Amino acid sequence: MLEQNVNLAIHWWENENLNSSNNNNIKTTIPWLFKTGGALFKSIRYLTTGEIENVTSIQMAGENNVVINLEISPSEYFQLRGILAMTADLYRISTALGKQDTGKLKTHLNKVKRYSNKFRDLRNFFEHIDSRLINLDQHGISGETTTDCGIHYSPDTKNCFHLVFDGTSFHFSDEKKAKKRSFTTKNFIPIFEGLEGLYDEITSHKIHETKYPRFTDYYNYNNL
Image (cartoon, rainbow, N blue to C red; front, top):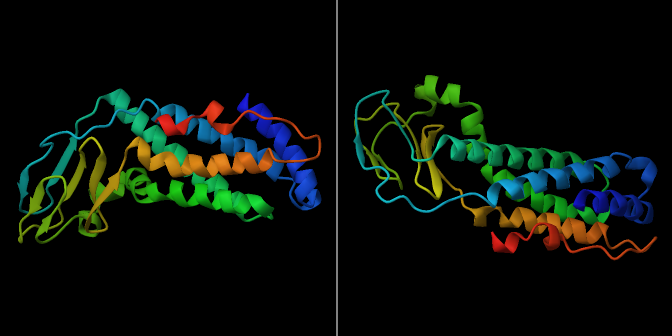
């Protein structure tokens, strides 16, 4: 139902606000952005997060050692990876839209783009996991380092790797650094704020003015 309203609203909004001859992709692409946002919402509403006590406590030493600690089920892992895929799609679609004349939509598209891109480092890590595991000289950690997930790298450590999920954040070695990316439902709220702003704008058209449901009637992200 949301997608039907978006299809209708963007048609009249564009006719009212933009030179349609220069923006023929917007009418077809905006609904796709909302479809992707809906897929993200339905994934994260079932996201179960909560700090796992003492998930890792390791003194790391030596060379080319690997620690992987993902205390989640295969179905939960599948869900987490799907969520990252949707943030990538949101980033890429909003980026493509941003290269066109979108008028008042630009501010909201930029917010979707900015906050979906917060997960870029983690997306890239998984997308190129082969490189991270094979090229430890480029991505592993060397020297003394203390992570937030309970791993202490000794001074003599060379090219070592870790991937840990502690229930609320991913911890991973990448580009020779110990990185951390928070991963809870609250981290995704700004994306939905951007989508809500976008929805409010396109449903504000005066040509064939229509009373539309609120965005939160479909995706009440405040209750995540």
